[in-house]
Image (tube, rainbow over all chains, first blue to last red; front, side, top):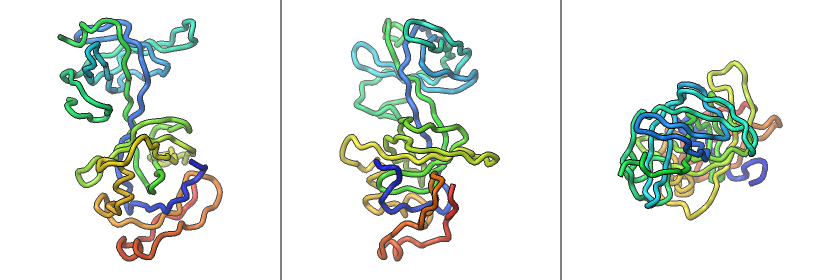
Amino acid sequence: MSDRRKAPRFAFSSPAQAQLYVAHDVQIQRNGPEQLTVVSSVASPKGEELALRLRGPDGSVVTLQVRTIDSRPIVDDRGVHYQIDLQICSAGQAVTEEWSWVGGRGDQ
Amino acid sequence: MGWWTWGPMTGALIRRVPADVLNLSSGGCLLKSAAPLVPGLVGVLELQVFGRSPRDAVRICHASSRPGSALPYCAGAEFLIFDAADSSSIRDQVARDRTPELSSPLARAGENSGMSHTTPKAYSHRQHEEWTATSGDHREI
């Protein structure tokens, strides 16, 4: 798209609430029923609440609601990354679904 | 089988950024947020209006800040098109003139996240009749 929108735009008389969901790939280092550790290219402040989407070998997907316990930079052959400890707050059931990671069908 | 028995794997960590949508068009929208949204950032925007949650993938095109306000970061986003818009798409809501159902009456918008002056945008006579115009916010950011 060009620098500015060309189509007519219309403003809400009062701003509409929205959520922007931004995803980053992570590698799971350690996992367990209550906590797990991931490596990400993006840091996460302590206490931040996130969703973690995992896809199993059979194609099923599970969404975990997690909270950051700790986040620390690490250096590996790919540069600086962040090792993030996550507390699992709740876990949905593994479901098989099509493309959709925002409140997708069958998500908990 | 519990997910923790799946063995080595990757995943996607998804961050939720609350935002206000100030205006929208068939091509994009203007957002305000408490957290900075950097140009190039890609995500899925989900509107919350009248019990509906239409959504579309977006990319942040340009951004600015207004220090001191509750939502100091302002960003222009474009919709990313991967397929035909369906009924759950924000683009579909705009294209089918469903927008008045999504929110209270809309007004012409002159606001954007750029620094240069822009004039009020053109809008159709039909839209003028159907969508009750309000004064809107014509300040430049």
